[in-house]
Each structure stands twice: as structure tokens, then as C-alpha cells.
Picture 1 (tube, rainbow, N blue to C red):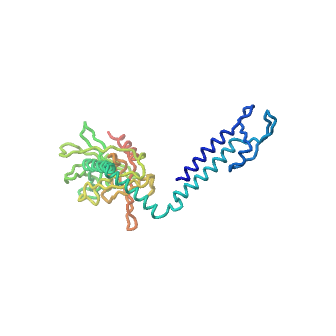
Picture 2: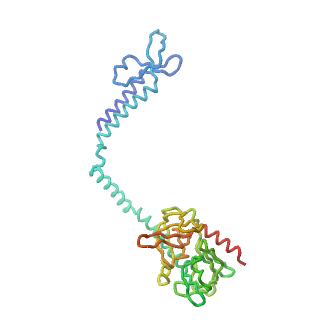
Picture 3: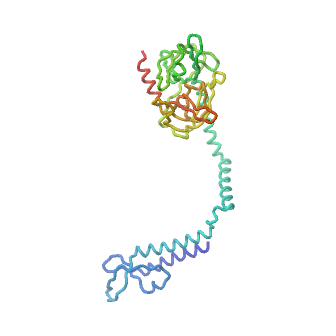
Length: 333
């Protein structure tokens, strides 16, 4: 570091030296007159831009101040940079000693965060958010079974999105393909109890259907899920899927993943799907994906499944679902 101090001292002396040699002409054009002694110093030279007469009648060369300043600055900058580069041994930055030092410092910083409780706080917040969504799923996500007469045709999941207090009626979203083969439907709860449901309408292309059921005499707590904003959902955000994968033996399962992509085209419909990697299977159809605020941002509809593919699930964006809901509800009595 002595070299750096020497160079900085040189800068100060040089600045003072140049300052003492500055003389402005009578025409106030802020020119610098450099006397002959300056040319003996080890400074960069510059081309005279013009000549002028002093009142004494002597002719001297006049240099452009900005040009000289830039050259002096660059010269000192280069010398300081070179000395720093050599002293700090930056050419050896890839050496094991340097990388080990960086690793040790990063490790020490993380250990400091752990000891201060900062990281545990972040993890607690995330864990509590997952707990809250799990509780919501238990009270808001149901099973949907379709029957043709008395023959069961399909089962899936649904999420309750609205409650009409005057009629004590709950409304839920599921997939069209869950109900398309049936003529009567039941909503199934975790205790295996069930209630009859009424089909309100569906959209086959988007693959959304709406059902309703009465809340009278239900001996259980039901919570309405808030429909969020799928446009605001960001790729990389955590998502939680709720439903009944592979049937009611796994009723109310939740899985977590991230939003992997948006605007995905996977079939010939006009729908552009939300891709995620939360585990879903048959039986999850019609179930929601939540964000960590407990808002429904999509309705699960399909997945890619093969020995070569893993973690590619697709959901209908909830903003599109809202338009289907508005259309269907507008035709209700």
C-alpha cells in the first residue's frame, strides 16, 4: 500500500504545481499559460492550440486546459490501476486460495444470518403461509362425482368460490370433462359424506363447469376461496395445488411447486394455460392452484404424463374462468 500512498501524494503535489502555474489572460478566455519549467517535468505533452501575445510582448504557447487535465488524469489513473492490480494480485483471482476465502466469507455470512434468526424468520413466514393454504384447502376444496343414473362415471375436484346467504347456496368450479358423462352429481367431503349438486352450466372448450349445492343441514365448516388475478401471477412464484389425486383415498391432498410458465398452448382450444410443477394426477381435475395468499389463480385441467416427462401440469387461468362464470351466472334465474 506504500505505492498507493506515494502515487496519491504525487497527485496532490502535481495538482498544486499545476494550480500555481495557471494564469488567465486579460481577455478572460480561461486559458492556461505553462512556463518552460513545466516541460521539464515527466508529464504528457499536448499540441499547442494557438499563440497569443502577453502585454510584455513575449510570445508563449497556450494549451487547452481540458486536454491537459484529461491526459494528466489518465496517466495517474493508469499508474494507480496497475499498482493496485499488482498489489492485490488480481491476476490470481481464480486461485484456490482466493476462491476458498470467498467461500469462507459467504459461509460466515450465512451462519451469521442463522444465528441472528433472519433466515429462520423467512422460513417461518413461508411455512405459515403453506399451513394457512392447507387449512383453506380442507374447508374449500371438495370432491365431485358424476353419475349416469346410478353408475359412477367420473370423479374429480372442485373449489367453492361463492356463497349466497339468502338461499344458503354454495357455488363451485370444476372441469367440464368431470361432469360431461353424467346426468346427476354429488359433492363429496373429507368424512365421505356427500350432498346432491346441480349443474348450472359449462363451457366445453375452456373445460369449465359450475355446480351449486345447498348448505342446509351441513355439519361442517365451509370456506369460500377468493379468486385472484392470474395475470399478476409471476413465473417462479410458489403455487399450491389442492384436490383428490387418484380418488378419495387421497382426499384433500396438497402439493407445492412453482409457476413454470404462462400462455402455454397444449391443444387446439383458445386457452393459453398456466404451467406448473406441483404434483397433480387424475382426480385433481377441477381443483385449484393457490398462490401463497390463498387466492385461486388457476383451475387444474391436465398434465403431460410419460416416462420421459415429469412435473408438467397445466391450469386454466382464473381470469379466463371468471369470464365463464360471469356468462353462466348471467343466464341463471
